[in-house]
Structure formats: structure tokens, C-alpha cells
Amino acid sequence: MLCVFMLCVFMLCVFMLCVFMLCVFMLCVFMLLCVYVVLCFMLCCVCLCCVFMLCVFMLCVFMLCVYVVVCLCCVCLCCVCLCCVCLCCVCLCCVCLCCVCYVVCVYVVCVYVVCVYVVLFMLCVFMLCCVCFSIFDVWQPLLCVMDTEIIKTVLIKECHTLFTNRRDFPLNGELYDAVTVVEDDNWRRIRNILSPSFTSGRLKEMFGIMKKHSSTLIKHLQKTAEQGGTVDLKGVFGPYSMDVIASTAFSVDIDSLNNPDDPFVTNAKKLQFNFENPVFIIGALLPFTMPLLEKMNFSFFPDSVTKFFYAAVQKIKAERMINQHKSRVDFLQLMMDSQKSDQSDKGKETHKGLTDHEILSQAMTFIFAGYETSSSTLTFFFYNIATNPEAMKKLQQEVDRTFPNRAPVLYDALVSMDYLDAAMSESMRLYPVVPRLERQCKKTVEICGVTVTNTTTHTVTHTDNTQTATNTTTDTVTHTDNTQTATNTTTDTVTHTDNTQTATNTTTHTVTHTDNTLTVTNTTTDTVIHTDNTLTVTNTTTHTVTATLLTLIIL
Ligand code: HEM
Image 1 (cartoon, protein in one colour):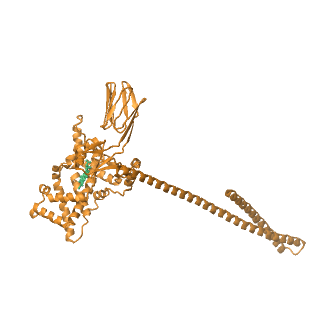
Image 2 (cartoon, protein in one colour; image 1 turned 60 degrees about the vertical axis):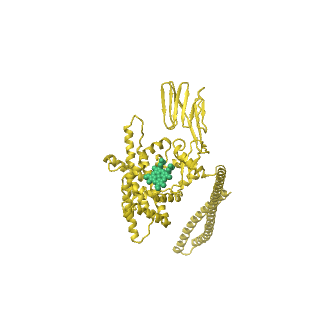
Image 3 (cartoon, protein in one colour; image 1 turned 180 degrees about the vertical axis):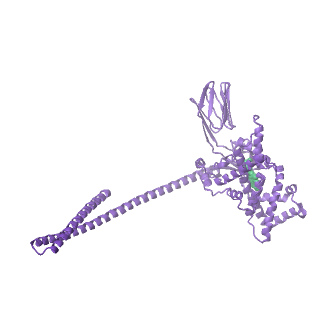
């Protein structure tokens, strides 16, 4: 209807415009005629001809008037029409706007309603889970353990069998191969290389470096005290920790206490774990979005920071390769040496060193794991001492006893200070920088009368021609090739028995099928190639693993 109306208005406008043009044209003609008549009057004397001309003239004037009126009407009409058109356009715009507003409103309301329902649904699921399992980390069911016997079993006795891994939390970015992230054999391998860095002997070696940076810290504090100023403890313990880590880990001396703008410090500060990080919130609330976030290169650690540290460590490492580092053995050198021993052990397969990327990741882990923890622990300790004068007095007495007359601080004397040790432990108990340890349980077990369940569902579907094998929950895979059966036990070892042939799949998903004399090895990619005599059968194994693991927390 609106369109038809608009069309009519438009046609009318065009018609009026034509009339107007005609009028103008006629007006011009009559104007010329008038001019002609006036000229005639002026040139000739009064005669009959003039009378005729006068009549013509009068007619002209009359016509002129008529045309002027018509013209004016046309113009007015045109204006009216034009106004109509404008009005229509405005109306149309309004209608459009209304439509858009309406659509937007409906959309917003819909989204809102959907969100409310999703939240309500999630809450219902959450409450249901809470009723069944009691404790959750958003969606992750937890079993909190405080019994020392169970803790011992989890962290020591069964560490390498059942409780090797921490929770699988992606979005680690470049740190995907850090010791804190990797699992099972990879963790064992990296941990074995790093462990020598943390022996008491190694700490004793590093004591001198720590003392050097401690004296810089004391000088700084003394200066502030003399000036009567106040000290932001985190502000001084942060650079102190960074100095100690940088020199013990990479033999790099950065006096960050006096250079607060040192890029090592500014970047390390950005590594602090932030619970308000939107990526963390989304990942925790909607765990199913994590693979997508990972694909989109989202990470907890800012890209610029990882790039900075990777470049810095890479540079130090490259310099050492050229100049053969001799001064002292630091964490980085131990990791680089593991590469060398790996090369010399080649063929024996006794020891596997770290790759270049793994070295960079571990180096960055030291910064990440050591900077915030050490500086916060020191800050809390000094706060506790300052707010407990009695404890401070006792500690002062112990210091005076151990190092009389301001004797130099020695490692052995320091580790013998029981009250200091107790005070530090109590401070860490009151304000733990890492409030809990966590491990994933690989299978359902009973520890000291408590059943720790693993609700993992490992569904493995093997399609060999027409055969299908499904592995559910218990990690047992049954392959039915005609009459043969293969079993995969909890350790991820798959034994395929095809008549006399045996194939083994170890934890790293390495599948070795020995059919007659032929061996086929498949690593990591989960693609299994079966070779039966001369026949190669490609098995498009689908390893769908849905893990709902019960996390064990040790408080
Ligand atoms: C007061 C200071 C520190 C505290 C409270 C602390 C606490 C912790 C805790 C609770 C864990 C987890 C242990 C587990 O899950 O079994 C851990 C792991 C780790 N920490 Fe520290 N840490 C501190 C300082 C450092 C420093 C200075 C470094 C390195 C220079 C460091 C490097 C590591 C590494 C590499 C791991 C991972 C070990 C693994 O996965 O096997 N930490 N730390």
C-alpha cells in the first residue's frame, strides 16, 4: 500500500513538473510577444494595426496572468508533493527504524532469556553435582585430602603410577612443554633433568649469589630507614627474587632493585596469575570452549611476555654455545648439558635430553614459578614478623645467637636456625602462596579406606574391515579380529594377538605390530597401521577420550 501511494505521489510530482515547465516555456513566449508589442507601440503611431496589436497585447497580458497563476499553482503543488515525498521518506525511515529497533529488542530479549536459562541450567547441574560429589572447582569434581597417610601415598608411594599428572588445563601457549604442564613419561624425563638443580648441594653453591643480592637489598632498606621513609615490601622483594632467579638460573646479573624499569622485572610482573583474567574465567566456567580458545591462540600468559623471555633465554643459550660457559653451573647449563649427554648416549637410548624448545619453556617456568612465589612468601613473612613483636624478638635472639657480633652468614649455620624455619613454615601456613597441590587419579583405587574414583571414559573404536572394538572406563580394549582378542590394560599397553602375532601399544601411544617378521611402529598420532603378511590395512582408529577426572587435592 505504502509503495503504491509513494508511486502515485511521485507520478503526480512528475506531471506537475511537466506542467510547470510548459508554463515557464509559454511565459517566455508571451514575454517575447509583449516585448514585440511594446516596441511596435513605440515605433508606430496610433493606427488600426496598433489597435490590433493592442488587442494582442492585452491577450498576452491576460495569458501571462493565467500562466503565472498556473505556474504558481504548479510550484505550490510541486512543493506540496515534494513535502509529501519527504514526509513519506521520513515515515519510511521511521518505520525502518522501528523495525530495526524491534528486531534488536527481540534479539536482546531472546539472548537475555537464553542466557538466563543457560545459567539456570548450569546452576541446576552444578547443584546436582554438589549434592552428589560435594566439592567442585566450577565443573571439576574434587576430593580434598588432609590425611597425611593418604597424602604420602598420593605424592610419594603412588606418584609414578596413579598420581603422576596434574589437572589437564590447556591454554598454556608456548609453555605447552613446561614441567608443570607435561604428563607421565615426559614429566618424568624433564623432572629427572631438573631435579639435580634443587639438591641441597646445589643450593649451597648458589648461597653466595643469594648473599650478594641480599646485601644489595639490605643496603637499600637501610638507606630508606635512614631517610625515615616507608617501604613497600613487595616492591623490594620482587626485584630481589628476580635478581636471585636470574643469576642462579641463567647467571645473568640484573640489579633490578636499582633498575626497576628493567625489562626482566616489568615482564616478570606481567606473568602473575590473575583470576580476573577473562580467558581464565571463560575457560573455567565454560571448559568446552577451551579447545576453541586454544585454536584461537588464547593463553594465560601474555604473548609479548613469553616472546621476551624466550628471546632472552635463546640469546643467553646461543652465547654459551659459542663461549663455552665455565664460570658456574646454573639451571640453564644443567639443561644444556642434558642435550650433550643425550647426544653421547645416542643409540643406547638410556637418557633423553631436552629439546631446544623444552629448555626455553623450563627456563621460563623457573621465572614464572620462582618469582611470584618467593617474593610473596618473603612479603608475608616480614608482615607476620612485624605484626608479632614477640616472634620478632625471639627471632632476633636466634639470629644474635647464631651469628654473634655480626658474624658473616654461613649456609650451615643458617639451615640450623630452628626458630626461623618454624616461623617461615607458620607464615607459609597462614598465607600459602600455593594453597593446594593437586593430582589426577588415573584409575579407581582405594587408599587407606577411601575410594578415589576415576570416571574416565576411554572409548576406543577400532574399525578393521568389519570389526569393532570398544574400550570403556576400565581401559580394557578388546579387539575382535575373527576369533582373536587383544587386551589393553590400564597402563595403555595394547596386546594384539593375531594367531601368533603380538602388537604392543605403550603409554606414549606407540603401536608396534609384529605380524610374521614385519614390525610397524606408529607414534603419537594415534593412527594404527596393521601389516598382515604383504597386506597393509590402514585402521582409521578413532580415539575418543572423554575424561571426567576426579581431582585429588591435598590441603
Ligand atoms: C617460596 C617459594 C616457592 C614456593 C612456595 C613454591 C611452591 C611450589 C609448589 C606448591 C609446587 C607444586 C608442587 C607439586 O605439585 O607437587 C611447585 C612446583 C614447582 N616449583 Fe616452586 N615454589 C617456590 C619457589 C620456586 C622457585 C624459586 C623455583 C625455581 C627457581 C620453583 C620452581 C618450581 C618448579 C619447576 C615446579 C614444578 C615441579 C614439577 O612439576 O615437578 N619454585 N612450587
